[in-house]
Amino acid sequence: MKVRLDKLLSERGLCNRSEVDKLIRLGEVDSRYGAKLVAKQKVEAEEILFRGEPLDPEKLYILMYKPQGFVCSHDDKGQLVYELLPERFNRRRPQVASIGRLDKDTTGALLFTDDGELNHRLISPKHHADKVYEVWLEKPIADWRVQPLREGGLYLEGESKPLLPAKCSLLLEGQDEILDIKQVTSAITQAQEANVEESDHLLLTLTEGRYHQVKRMFLALDNLVTKLHRVSFAGLDLKGLEIGQWRFLTNEELQTL
Image (cartoon, rainbow, N blue to C red; front, side, top):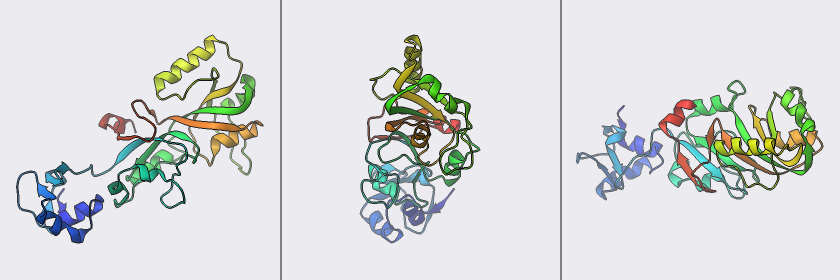
């Protein structure tokens, strides 16, 4: 679909509409086909180059390995997760936003998009997107003690709606953070073979996204979460990413969402 060039570049966060003619004169905006451009003309996004590079996609779908110490907010104090993204993403309209949030001290898989419809659908309780967490506790917990989490029906303090059932598996203690789904399967198998009946290290799969849910769940079981890492969101894991890195989702991954 054709759109005015100045509107296109502004919405993609690349510049203000008033700057486009100047950028054309400087050779920073041009047509891949060599056509003469003016700010007000209608163009296809695919034909435009900005500083010699194709434009970013119309909609952004991003997976980040969130580091510890960063806040999922646009305007809170301190280090913000949006500072880890290119500045042009944050100037987009509509604005790029995280799909749900991770606490400041929580690491792991965090999705971003400027597709409001998808964002709403994935955080909706009706969608039941799986979120896999690796949990470390202040004190070891027995396998039978987490059975209420598996069965569902547990009430968190201040809430009138019970929790949905969650998958919960004890793991061997002392393992590093898990980065992909294959490692999840391997870690569970190792724990089962070792017949782990008590541990301070667990895997938890939720389909809900309540406020500080994981921490509050274990608080209800008289325990404290000392470290929390999200391995995956809706089947998307961190394989290939280092802490603080991000990547675009593939077309295949988008189809799964």
